[in-house]
Length: 472
Image 1 (cartoon, one colour):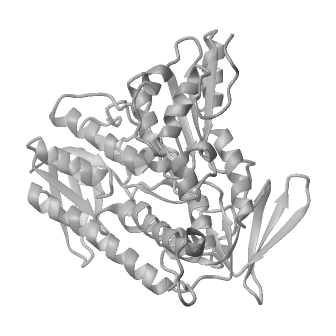
Image 2 (cartoon, helix red, strand yellow; image 1 turned 90 degrees about the vertical axis):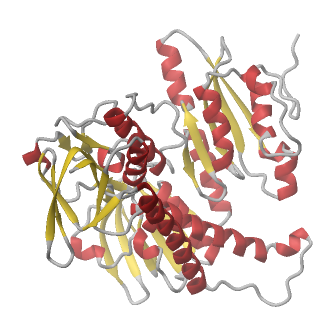
Image 3 (cartoon, one colour; image 1 turned 120 degrees about the vertical axis):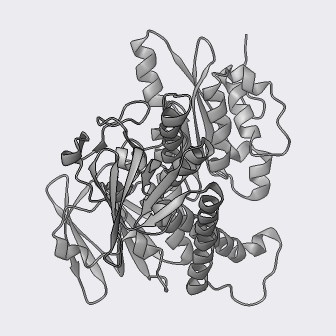
């Protein structure tokens, strides 16, 4: 008899299991694949390993501009890149397995079913099975790739994001269907590796999760670096050609356009995966967007909780982990609600992009409804000493604040180490700091963080290192 059985050992499920064990619970985990889920095995971690290889390769090719001479030609060894990626995955998956052992968490390998609250059956890969009982059940079955609206036979001419993580040679050209986080990251990776890359999508903006201005600024930067973006196209079929593949699309004006490439990658994002569970029979309310939960991750069935991508609210590993903590603390500790107000979103593009808190458009709408105004302050990396020294001056830090109080409502970054800098904004939004609060902190020099400080000064119209309107 377990206190908790977790179905799925991704970043939501394994964190929840470890936290429950900390709280004294006897925990079992059912996982049909490798622990770590999509994030560790086919998502966040392997893509970041490729991002790092792309960074090193690009830096080596540009070394002469930094005063470093490399004798001979700089070449990319993609099989070695993939081998390193597999080593990174193995190290981190092994780390989770060791944490399970240390915490006393038992892993049951196989496919789960939930015939009734408190009961979980496990079908083992060898054909055997077992039954588990638990006070609580946590559904953390994750998500699966979203596919384009084309005949299934057409998809045979494409590769998935999983396949893109296992290529042994760099395609001469790659057409990426999708312009969200996944599509942009793969576009930057394979462009750095030497592919001619084009992204196609229906909607006009790249990266819907980030602030609209950041999206609009990123597109011309990618174009300048050689990545083409075509929007307003609607895919209707994918066909093989003598040279590769062709994607045939309709345009908004009723025309037709064709895009050809050696390799076509589908990277349209993800949708909830219910893991084959019969949620209707169990009585768990859900729809195609995900399982319905309350603020403490409880489903409509007592004793059954759900977290992560299967909830369908935010497809982020960090959110899945946070939801897992909320769920098990409601079961075994002091309950608290899940807080989505401060969730950083990060894109490991080149340059990186990140957002936290309210986007400018959201803040304008909220302020207008309440009879208030907002203040937007921006500081470019081209005026930041560390960014200039690094040779990475594309982008800016943007703060969105309440005009009357100066409270920081959101922060948005495009530029070097945006993935790290965004957490300064997260702390500021969470603590309800004002621009003045942030500006009065002494930031080390020279650092990229000084761009955050300068944007904070700009909330009051007083940036130091760019010209501003003089006070009278």
